[in-house]
Length: 135
Image (cartoon, rainbow, N blue to C red; front, side):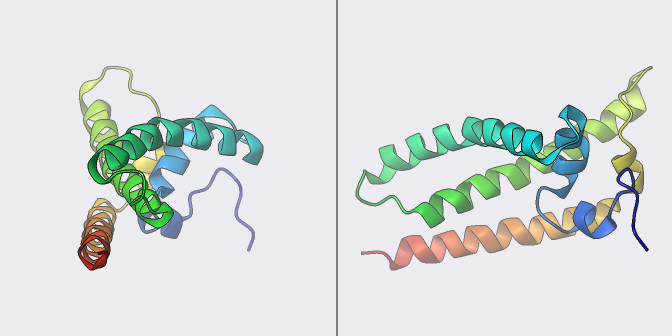
């Protein structure tokens, strides 16, 4: 069965990193892939520039690894995605005219939180191993 484009895939929404971000933020700006890519690149640059600056200032130019920068950026996005959910949940309860976010109603918040905690722990552990193994 083919899903309609306005339906939510629960696996993407609950388990895949940036799934909630995709359904609630990227699809809000535009409905086509090239536009999604441009928005994602713009917002990623907002995270990536401070991450690269912090990394360079801490470890110097010779130590920077692309994998580590990608992992740090993904870690920041996962934490930011949790903030999106908390903000949307609070806004729905308190505002008199909240923005309609149907993904929040479909989302299994326990599964979402558990998978994000596991992802954060895994990324942090992997980064710690990489940092301690490098000479």
